[in-house]
Picture 1: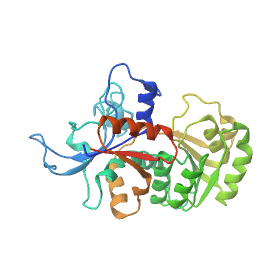
Picture 2: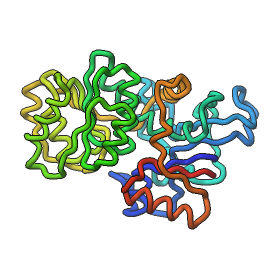
Picture 3: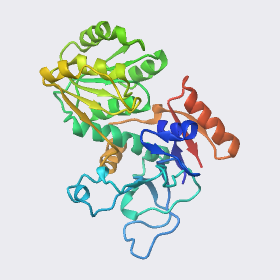
Picture 4: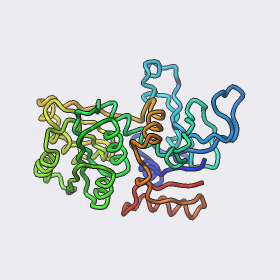
Length: 317
């Protein structure tokens, strides 16, 4: 391993020993956003050699269940994914991984950018689920790491206008620097939804075709459902709340479709193409870097959990 990013789920596991329905019951290595250099290959590996720089897709599916056979291997009930209990993760000096889940990096793509293919893959998968294209105006709820990569993916898919929303001025400023057409600062108060929906729709200057909720809270989902035009779509990306009370009936009578996502499927080649071609620049998203000593690991997680100016925290091993 040479580059490993910290995900919000890693922080959840470290702080609360759980993330959504996944619970830590015994000691576990976390980490799943990763890239490294091949040290050794098995006798049947034909396309990789020692010295190759690779990005790793972290989930190993069974390839036998109906979902895998349908091509939706991200939904495999027997998925074994780095850092998801009880499977050990990639925040380690070395890992062993299937060759078909190791993707060789183009010469102009760094190991850090290779590690960022994992969060970017979530954004790419979300854009595919929502059918983003050149005629899709996009609203992104949340300007954290996931919101920013979803915004970048939507632009790469051709979205002509993107409005991004957050409670934090710094994250909104970063979003604007990365190419958001408009930013809207909101409050955490649920009673402000109606007024903020009006602000969002004014900022969009057109109907909101697709909303991505990259936070996953009652308020953000309520805002997304209310702001999206009739016949539009809301994609739930973040999982901040396990359960929500949301205005689903008003959205249903406007035929607003709601879709969810989990992980990704067949995204690494496209992510690497977006990065190597310059369509997506992930470098500004990486705000903090740490080494791999005990002290630095602790500092890195505190930095990531503390918010502030930190967006993506990266380990350089």
